[in-house]
Image (cartoon, rainbow, N blue to C red; front, side):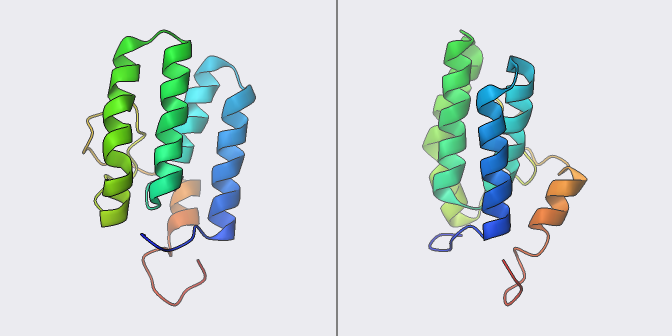
Length: 122
């Protein structure tokens, strides 16, 4: 989705999840960041920004494995998004293989459903 802006309704959902991740308890923060990750995958900057937030949380929690996994993901996030090569539904966590697609939660699937269809409202 290089050069295309994130649709307003998608941006609102992404911003909501990222904002919620700042104030929730640690486990809920990860859930919000995972949901924001799924939403952001088609757009290079939001996708990378999400991984930067995941890295910050991993560092704050002193989780070395997660932090290392996030560094790797930060490197590949923007190019993967720009080229449309990302595993849909992947939560972005280090515990999930980098290229493994995962089921998309129903509400997010609905939100993202018409992104691949040109001419529809984005």
